[in-house]
Picture (cartoon, rainbow, N blue to C red):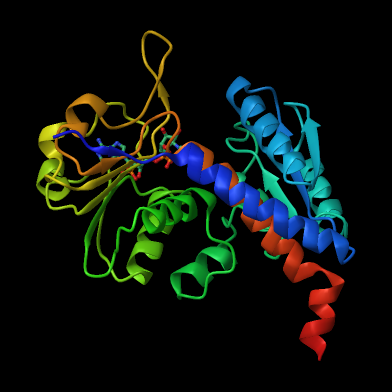
Length: 291
Ligand code: NDP
């Protein structure tokens, strides 16, 4: 058996087209959604991500602003930049590209972003809202995974969802979203004993560790849906996920490829979050709330 491929690129294109339509409506009502991306230092991978995010914004008709700061930027200089963006009415979403250089405190920086403009959904207030079942911004990668599952017709109600990797940006928010959708969730980390005994029970298996090949076909339940979040470069410089694709696709019912799976969805959901931020912050929305 060979698994059905889940085409994240095609689904992302659909989401982006829908966002572009809604952006046009909002613009006609006088608000152009705007995203500000702050990049500190010259990390090559971050530069590519930031360029892609800005280009995607512009393609959707949004305003995008990239603020490039020197590697030597101090904590207080960075906080000043964020404070200015928090008060800029043309900016509806603020994203600080991670990882930051080692001398900067990412947690403090994230907490400085206005929770109403935190389109990554990493602020403690937004993480708390997600945990209590009233999400404002869903972190983009798990949000994209939920969209993919929905579009594939995979119901999480009563399903065993096993997530390998428990980071604040992928694993933990994925667990919250799956739980809210009615799943029984297992969240694994580097200390988990006998990882295969957990993954083999998964109706839906989400892998986000940054460890290429950590999940092989023998660890997958026959017919399961496998979502590979990992982005790694192998010895030949080729992009690979965390799942050993060739062996897993023989067993799974459906699987995401790398590239072309989760990655494009992450950017599409960033646009969606920025649009929703602008819808909430626009004067028309404010007027409607007051009525
Ligand atoms: P982190 O490094 O922040 O977290 C990795 C998680 O994996 C940790 O919880 C860690 O456990 C766990 N882990 C590590 N080794 C093992 C192991 N042997 N068994 C089980 N769990 C393990 O990574 P991120 O969440 O930021 O990213 C994960 C991957 O996803 C990376 O490849 C990244 O590039 C990719 N990514 C892709 C995105 C996309 O859009 N496609 C978006 C974001 C990330 P512990 O908590 O114990 O340390």
